[in-house]
Length: 225
Image (cartoon, rainbow, N blue to C red; front, side):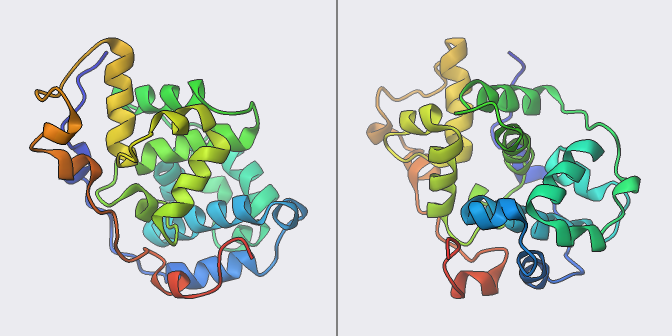
């Protein structure tokens, strides 16, 4: 297994958004697809991610694909199914056909694919999206554009149920992904015999509160409404 950095995401610096992610989210949800009407929570998740990624990309060719680790074909199908309004906000033809992951990213994606609950395109897309967003510096729920951490917990339970079931102590999800990889490879990186005795306990299990990247969304209607 390739060396896993202690906290690679601390090296990441996201560009300052030039578009308001919350406004993009509202626009994406204004014209729901049949998929979105049948499954509003999944539509909410994809619209949150797309809104934040579009805001960060700020019109850069290929920026959306890089932010989500999805090539042009996957992006096109995702948007057609879950956020058709997004076609008016980007040029899909400018997105690359494929996205290459480095060794670290590839291992996390393979972990998620191994534990996905079904063989749907949606779960495969989310495995790539979670992988790429896990490289960013904030809490994972924030880097997905979600309104609160509980939404990430629900997403994991619905799409990666057997992996979510292993996180019995509610470890921070980014830390949990890395710990799971180490355990699967037979590594023990923690010096303390139990998490409760570890001096880094707060880093793995501490508070994950904060403001949503789509700040005004967190004060609006529930996502499953």
